[in-house]
Length: 330
Ligand code: UT7
Image (cartoon, rainbow, N blue to C red; front, side, top):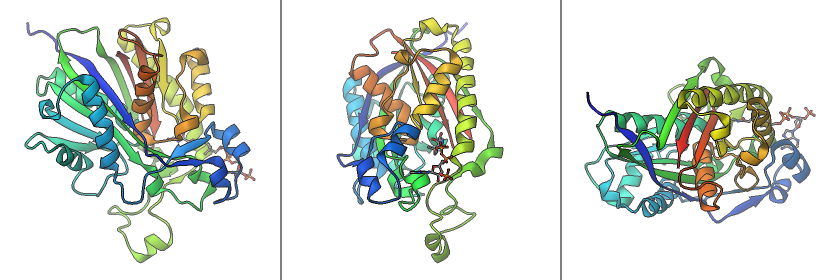
């Protein structure tokens, strides 16, 4: 019988643009207040990229760090996957631009679009490629510049989003009890019109009308998204935990998608986990879609909240709706 191939995490990295946009700054742009944003979302500030800095640049900076922490060169990578809903261009993929920055050729690269669940979906893709023996070393990135698809006149959405990128290097391993222990994914597209970006695709190609009507920016029915997010995140977190064969006591830290502090608290309560074991950095980042779970994981490792051998669980939810959870050993 052939031996099963495990997947281990060799390194992680993250990168944020320098520019900080505070709630006080937003008070000058739309009719809002620091008090409203803080109590309703938990967000105090978010990072915003420069006008001419593309998503691939954030992805590159995070990847350089991840490769350094993995102690390998870009040339050793067999596959690059970038999870993003804010690509540099519609074509080619942001993964192509990232590959070009590294100057490596002939290796396969592609983007993955699963909104805020993109990085967790990417973990599943990486694990499948490694387990099948097709690739041994994969660079997986979650990178977003949501500031560029935000309607800065809409107070319902513009206070929520930010920019940033995180990266992970995964590799084949003989060990089954390290790296990616389990994954659970789901989607229900009947909810698509609660969180979407109407124009720029084939339904509403770019036109004078789409620009005038601000259809190239995120539209969201926040209250409805909130309710489903809590139910699905709690559910998928429990599913992945069962699949891993671990109990809640084995989990050192849950790293949930950082969309709203109240969602995070409600999910923790539903699965019976005290907030001390839930990682939160939303106050500094806002919601950065597919970059949230990986940048939070990288921070948890860097600040010592997660150490070698610890088990963590990433839990995400986003547009589509899509959701997913992964139980990992650092
Ligand atoms: O990442 C993918 C998943 N995304 C999410 O999970 C986001 C989920 N949703 C949410 O986080 C929350 O629903 C929001 C933060 C978006 C909104 O919070 P809420 O408690 O659901 O507020 P609401 O939309 O029900 O609005 C309550 C009130 C409204 O005023 P009225 O109608 O009661 O007079 C809004 O107009 O708050 C008003 N409001 C604001 N007030 C000040 C909405 N945005 C703002 C604002 N500042 N920025």
